[in-house]
Each structure stands twice: as C-alpha cells, then as structure tokens.
Amino acid sequence: MEKSRKKFTDTIDKAVAAANRMQRDELLFNYKGILYPVTFCSPEVFRAMESFEARSDDIILAGYPKSGTNWVGQILSDLVAIFEKKMKNKESSVNEEELEEFPYFEIGDTGKYERMNKLPSPRLMVTHLLPENLPTSVFKNKAKILLLIRNPKDLATSFYHFSNVMSPLPSYETWDDFFTAFMTKKMPWGCYFEYLSAWNKYADDENVMVLTYEELKENPAQGVKNIADFFGICLNEKELQSVVERSSFQAMKKNSQKTHGAFGNVLFRKGVVSDWKNLFSEDQNEKMDKAFEEHIGGTKLGTKLKYEVYCKS
Ligand code: A3P
Image (cartoon, rainbow, N blue to C red):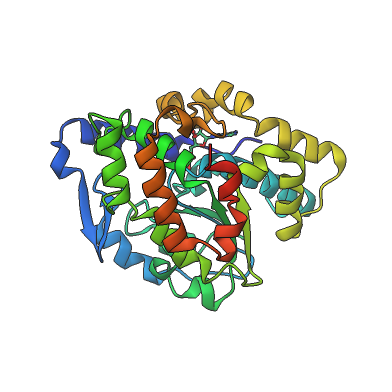
C-alpha cells in the first residue's frame, strides 16, 4: 500500500502560497548562524525538536538540499514497506493519513516530536540539518544514519534551478549571482562545504553509511542492496528489482503528481550527472576546486565524492 502523502503535499502547497505573498528579503531567517526558509522552519519547532527521543532502529536520511533526498527517501520508504509486510507488525486498520508526518525532520509543528515519540518502529525521517543541530539523542541512542552526498558542482546547479522555481527560496537573476551566494554562505541550511566538513567527523561511525548520488546513479541495484544491508532489511531478487524500478528517475517523475503534487513538476528536473558543465565558467571552476580542496580535500567524504572524476572537465 502506498503511504499517505497528503501532509507532504499540503505542507508544500501552503509554504508556496505563503511565500508568494512575501518579499524576497523576508524569505529566510537566521537560527544559530544558519539560514532557513520561514515558510518551512521556525525557532519554536527547532526548540521543540530537543524533546525527540531517537531509537537505535530509527532510519535517518541526512543530505544537504538537492543531493537527491527525495530519490533516496523513496527507496527507503519502499524498503520499510517491505520490512513491515514481512514483520506483519502493521494492523490493516492503521490510518496511514493520521500517522503521517512531514518526512523532513526539521519541518512541521511544535507537537510533531511528541507525536513521533508514539510512532511504531521503524521510523523514517529525512533531514538537511548539520549533525550538531540534530537532537542529541540521535547520536546518543545510535540511530542509523544514511548520509547522502552529491558532487558540489551538480548540487549547486540543481539548487540554482530549484531556487528560481520554488517561491519559498530566494531566486536569482543570474547564475553568477547564485554562484556568489552559494560560495559565501548565503544558502538555506548553510554552506555545503561546511556541511560536508561537519558530517565528515561522523563518516567512520558504525551507525553511519555514506552514499553518493553518483554511485547510486551508476549502479542503482547495488546501491539499493547496500542500503538494505545497512538497515538489516532482507530483499529477494524480485523485491530488489521492484525498488530499483520504482525509484528510477522516469518512474518517479511519472508518479510525481501522486507523490509530490504540483511540487513534482519542479523537483524532478534532469536527474543526471555533469549538468554543471552547462553553467560553470573557468573562473567559477577554479573557485570551487579551491574551496573543495580547502574544506574537504583528502578527507573520507572528499575522497568518496571522486571530485577528479565528477567535477573536472
Ligand atoms: P537535478 O535538479 O539535478 O535534476 P532533492 O530531492 O534532495 O531536492 O534533490 C533533487 C535532485 O535529485 C534533482 O536533481 C532531481 O532531479 C534529482 N532526482 C530526484 N529523483 C531522482 C531519481 N529517481 N534519480 C536521479 N535523480 C533524481
């Protein structure tokens, strides 16, 4: 059975409608040094988040915006559905709509975390937050974290196009303006290089698995298998194939009206590797190469990203 997505589409539709009535400089607010969109996040909800009690069987997908979180979120939700079916621990009378929470951890209302404390395991959540801004119980109770990363040039390219069609985010007249903002820490959810550098400290933890957008794109079946193994979910060949097929870019785009509503039209843009080559100037390439080297070069996440392969012409 498909999980209910009503809360998801309603939340996005409301944020878009509210942002349409706002000025560009009203769209973001600063909380502990990081910018967030006012139509999705609030200081009150950040404060309420501390009451969340993580569990060791929680499934957390951590990824900076535009790293492919909706893609991997779809894979994880299919894996959880397979797991639940096998465990038969779900009553058929459970009202999916009532239990639904907006999947992004930091987005919701102040009552969200108390409600989540009552949800059955395994709970699946997605987050764009820096590790130090997650509730302390996430690391203390060893929740399992799948860390999704994407090469910074494609990520910036995707973020640029998204910012220009998603009213809750400030738009940019030119790519050059966006690039400057991206490189000078003006992005919602913070600077991507700082994000990588902060998460790199957790990359060797046994409860953290690192996955790149590019490796999943290159070999989706292996990627899905690795994810399932990490979360201890057994899959037969048929189940594996069905998760892979349902999470292909074409399948997700086709199904997006149902899963993402109007937001689907802007989210599923190209879904490819190397689109950055259509935007970056020589000077911008040099600036990003330097920033990458300074922040993350030679580290575990830096090496995992295969910068030489994916970010050099
Ligand atoms: P592009 O803008 O480069 O096309 P997020 O979900 O974190 O916002 O990331 C969105 C990016 O992931 C977009 O990248 C989107 O097209 C891509 N994406 C979404 N679903 C995908 C899929 N099934 N396969 C590959 N890429 C996908």
